[in-house]
Amino acid sequence: MQSVKERWYKLYSWVLVVTAAICLVLSTMALALTQFKDLQAHGFSTLALAISVTIILYRLLLFSRISNRFEKRVAVFGMSLITMLLSISFTNSTGQLHSWFHASWLVLILFGGMFGGYIILSFLVLTSMYMILIMTNVRGQLRVDVFSLGVLGLNFAVGAASYLIWRRMYINQESLQVARLSGALKSKEQQAEILIESLADGVIVTDPEGKISLVNQAAATLTGWSVEESVGIDVQLVAKFAEEDGKELSDDLNPFKQAFVTRKPVDIILRLMSRDGKTHHTVSLVVSPVILPKAEEPAGTAAIIRDISAAREEEHRRADFISTASHEMRTPVAAIEGYLALALNDKVSRIDSKARSYLEKAHESTQHLGKLFQDLLTSAKAEDGRLVNHPLVTEMGSYLEQLADTLRFAAEKKGLLLDFTIGTSEKSEGSISGGKVVRPLYYSYIDPDRMREVITNLFDNAVKYTESGKISVGLTGNNDIIQFYIRDTGHGIPPEDIPHLFQKFYRVDNSTTRTIGGTGLGLFICRKIVELYNGHIWVESEINKGSTFYINVPRLSSQEATELQKKVAQQPL
Ligand code: ADP
Image (cartoon, rainbow, N blue to C red; front, side, top):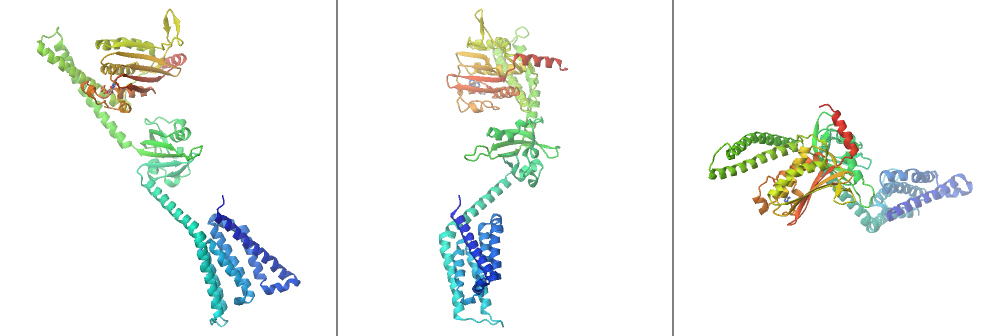
């Protein structure tokens, strides 16, 4: 939509063009045709012709260029000045200060004010200069008379009136507002710029094509590309990422692309390679799509990059220490546990009942200590990716059946009922033969020992945190996933604790957990192991009703399983 001001600019400039065109025609007639020679006495001279042509050419050739480059008002300003010269030329050739063409000056001054005080000012300077020139006689003496002063005064009075009229009507309300607004915007822009520059984290903003439109110094230091070099370049060229362990990052996993396509933020830890490829930083990266209101496509992406190399190194050192310490301590604890077991063994030693009860307690505590060291060691290894893992193609149904025998013992010892369901119990899925459901084969590529750790851990927890009732262990799935569940009728878990449950050392703090021993490492280890197989672990729970822990792992079709088995068998040991 065109603003009012815009329309006035146009109208004003075309009025001047039309006036110039009339002058052009009349001047040409006066100069070329004898019957119109009289017109020369009214100012239609060669000079007027030349200025008129200049005005028309200016409007046609320069006006829009100047207004595009600077502002419309600058273009109007130029046009007004040339027109003023035309007026002066007419005045000069029609009786100078006594010419009725003065009226055109006044009209120009009066309307020129619409486009800013500086137009009035320049008109007044021009007219004053002309008048001083006229008032000065050839010998250079200034001849001031009342009439000339009156004319000059009239010019200034009209200039002042024009300023007051237009300032109140236009300039004041629109231009000042615009000026104030643009000032505010500029300062906001500066503030944003200062803020982004002073951030210790790297910031990269891209356009929809993935080209960098903004980058701060911190990001430039991390990538090795200077700010000036980075702008306008494809972000994938500047920010080269690999997986944290150094593996190449596939193209569709590129976080910038992912955030743009999915329109969801991507929060990931990656390795950022330096420009020369010789060094790298471990970075925590959050890339968000830039979504403008009402826009269908994101306008680009914005990324925050934090260098976490030092923190990661510290974590590795800590994990190293914990694994070495727990490994060293596990050995003597195992020896103590062994000797205590010998002392409690009737066949090899004889002790009285009091000593037996003390030794039994010591044995229990030593076992707990041994488990703690084992958990610490496993969790430290899980954290820095050193967990021993030998995946095999495993049929999870028969695997769980074998495991069931071991698990059953723990549940029965506490008087809990146990229910195993392998495959779906719905008859529609399996075929009935001889009253038995023929269950599907659930193949997966996992390390059976590691998976045993997970299921045993969840099962032990179910037993540990359930006073009475039933524990159900089941296995179901669809074409893509295999799902385990371990359901109990225990105390349940408060909803506020659920999001933290799989974190290291997290234990629910209530009277039950305070009396029941534990380390808070079990579920953390379970999560780490399940994640090794691109699986997912979670819990659903209701207070006083019980909890269900679920594990999803990818399922292999029978054909995939056979092929993978063959491939593994062919691999050299
Ligand atoms: P812990 O050694 O304390 O059992 P875990 O990591 O195995 O450590 O479990 C973390 C916490 O989760 C436990 O302290 C317990 O509060 C809660 N929890 C785990 N499993 C269950 C369950 N089946 N029922 C109720 N609470 C559970």
